Length: 141
Figure 1 (cartoon, rainbow, N blue to C red):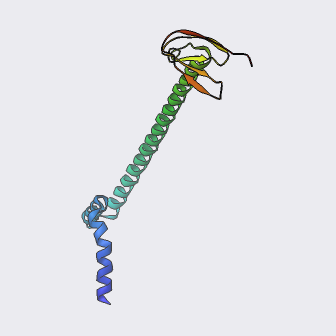
Figure 2: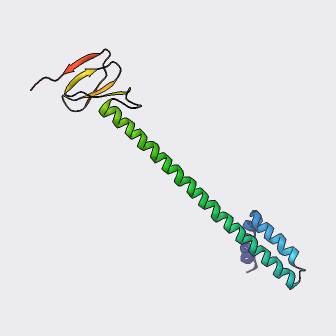
Figure 3: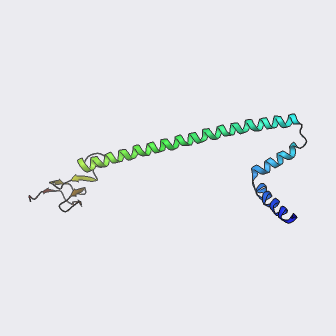
């Protein structure tokens, strides 16, 4: 029976030896061996106060991180909304910050400028990028 007990004690001691917090607690317990009841009570009170301070700090840290994450998500959403508006302006009006990238829709005809992409669509959605300026016109059915 001594062998299994010794084995289990070693299993308990290994994590204790590897964990710096547990090592510090063991060291402190050793120092408290000769302390009076009043000294122990005072140390216990100080430890509880420190633990409350640490918990409050941890709570504030998590709240701050949550606020930073929320602000970042809101900023990303605003950026995506701006990009979508710019894409819509470019696609439908050929204007806005991205207007130089997309010329608009020309399935019904209209002039085109070189280097801009136009959506035409005689047979579904097609993209046309002219190399020279040219008018386009719709052929009646």
